[in-house]
Every structure is written in structure tokens, then in C-alpha cells.
Image (cartoon, rainbow, N blue to C red; front, side):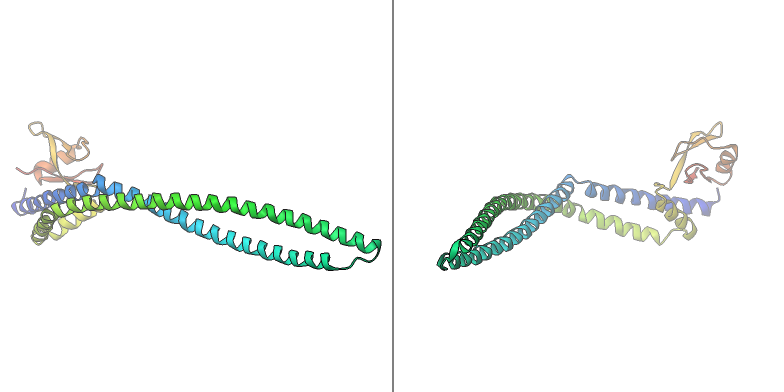
Length: 243
């Protein structure tokens, strides 16, 4: 392998090593159990919040219905008072008044039933709201506990993260632009690590891809011996064989 190319690969491999360390550290933080607990109780809290809002809306509708029924009852009570105060003249008038009174009685009974229904629904809504409020407060507390725990983990790894990022920035300045462009492209294609060693039998000049394990073709084996690198035909990673 040409010495300049070899040094370029060595620098890129050094960069990749730090990149792997950084990714492992980020994965440790992202897969933290406390973070999963935070996400869980955030959903529980949001569900409880939605339930409370729904209960408040239902309560408002029930209050409006109750107010309408109260007005209806007041209006019919006034009509009942008028009927009771009117003088009855003749059988036809009496029959008409009896029918109206029976109609009012039926309406009062229906209104009374609706009021009881509203009371039952209101009780159910209040119970559901109270339970949602209780659940929401508990979820809020659990979320806060998990957030503090996760925050401690992040804080404990902050210096290490900053150090790795700084080291990567410095190494980045020394890399071959074309090689790094290929590295970045493979990373974006979820081919990580992009640079892998050749594995196999060097004496027989038969190598495998250190990424996917595929046996290299004769052409690949020859290029590894000649130029020191070869792109895997299966996973497209860059296979290197440094002396």
C-alpha cells in the first residue's frame, strides 16, 4: 500500500475509533432505563390530562342541560299556576284543563328522570376526573424522579462526551476529504463501522469482509494485497489490510 494512502487510512481508523466510543456513550444515555421511565410516565400524564379536559367538557355540557331543565320546570310551574288559578266554565273547559294538567304531569316526570340521569352522569364524570387527577399527579412525580436520575447520568458523562467531541473535531482536520466523504456516506446508509479490517488466511491470500463476513472474490483478495483496501461487494464497507 502506498505510504500516503496508508497514513490516510490510519487517521480515518483513529477517527472511527473515537466515533465508536462516542456512539457507545450516546447509546448508553439514550437507552437509559430512567429515560424509558420518563417517556412512559409522560404518556400516562398526557392521557390523564386529556381525560381531565374531556371530563371538564362533559361537566360543562351537563351543567348547560341542567340549566335548561331548570328553566323548563320553572316555565311549566308558572303554567301550572295559571291553570290552577283559572276559573273552570263548563265540562269542555274542564276536560281541556285536565288534559293540559296531565300533559304537564308527564312533562314533569320526564324532566325529573332527566335530572336524575344528569346527576348519575355528573357523579361518574366527577369520579373519572378525580381518578385522572390522581393518576396524573402520580405520573408527574414518577416522571420527576426518573428525570433527576437520568439527569445525573447525563451529568456524570458530560465531561467524557465533551472530550470525545473535541478529539473528533481535531482528528477531523487531519482527514483526507474524499475518504471522509465515503465514510460519511456509509454512516448515513447505516453501515457502521464503515472501515473494517480484512479477516481470513493471509498465507493463502483468502480474506473475508470484517463487516458482513462475506468471502472476497479473487479480485478483492488481489487488490487487498496490492493496494491494501477493497470495497465489499455485499455491504459496501471499505475493507483495509494494513501491513
